[in-house]
Structure formats: C-alpha cells, structure tokens
Image (cartoon, rainbow over the protein chains, first blue to last red):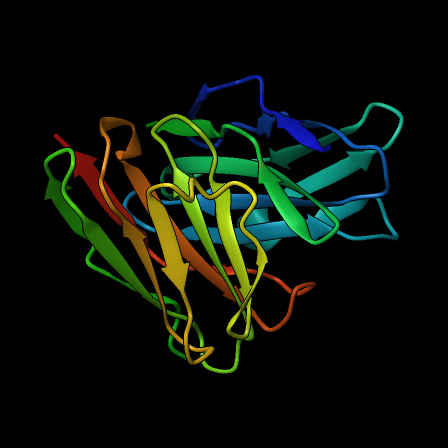
Length: 111
Length: 113
C-alpha cells in the first residue's frame, strides 16, 4: 500500500525568500504524484502533478516540483514566495486510481 | 463552470445525534468522492462512487456512516449516531472519470460536542 510522508508540519518563510516543502512516498508500483494547496476555509486545489515524462513539473502560481525515483521524493519549490502563498500544502500519491494524502505542511509567510 | 457545491458549511451537534451532508458535483462528472479531514491530518477517502454505484467504501465506518448517490448526480453522507471523534471537515470531490483530476468542494466542518 502507498503512503506519503511530509516531515515538516510547519514552515515559516520570509516574503520573497525561496521555499522547499518536502514529500517522500512509498509504493510498490509506479505512481502518480500530486501537490494540492488548501487556503483557509476552502477546499483543495491542484497545484501540479507528475504522471510521466520530465521529472521537473511546473504548476500554477510559480510552483514547481521534481520527481526523484531513486529517493522516492517529490519536493515542492518556489523561488520567491508571496504573502498570498500562505496556506496548507498536501502531497498525494495515486495508486490504482486511489489518492493517499500526506499530513500537510502549513506554509507561513513572514512580511 | 460551477464548482463542487457542499452544504451546510458548518454544523455543530451533540454526540449521539444524527447529521447529513449534501454534495452536488460538477455537471457531467461521473465519479464522486467523500473524504474526512481530521484536524492536523490529510484527507482520508471514505467512499467513492462511479455514477450511482459504490467503487470503494473500504474505509467507511459502516456501523454509523452511510452515503448514497441515488440518481448518479448529487450525494448525501450521513452519520448516525455521531461520536466525538467524528469532528472533522468532510470534503466532497468529483472527477470526469476515475482516472481524471479531482475537483474539491469547500467542505463541511462538523463539530461534535
């Protein structure tokens, strides 16, 4: 069965600084990987996804993630964060069309 | 295009009471999902429908939870009787089919006292 680990429950970052949110997964078969963002009192919104092909995936709002099969990681990055990026970020893995989410990382932007 | 609609947005009940949540998916989406998101955790799939049939309900506590999607469009999730540990946000999502992107509603925040 697949699982997702997000080691950082909270990440504070100064505005305009770069950020990396870490995600590691385990699965016995090939998987699809996702990052979702959840703004306060809202549902989840898809940021980006890896299905196949290039290991560097670009998403919305300037985010990107890199799939590393040997390290079973799918870390999310942004070179310069903005106040509006304050939200909870969830990494997810899809195996056999079933999504399994990590516990989330709360990104706080410090002005 | 209208998104996934859920109601109510908030609900407070006492333990042992019953509660029901409603979800209207995006028009044309055949697959509908209910997730439970407990504070500090990621969403956990409770049940998945394909049209009006259940695909996966392996993590649904069937002694107290039930869900239906009678006409293959909107869906209702019910808890009877509620326990304190049912306090969570209940998210509904829909997708065109089982392999397509899931779109999430705003969720219903349930507090059981």
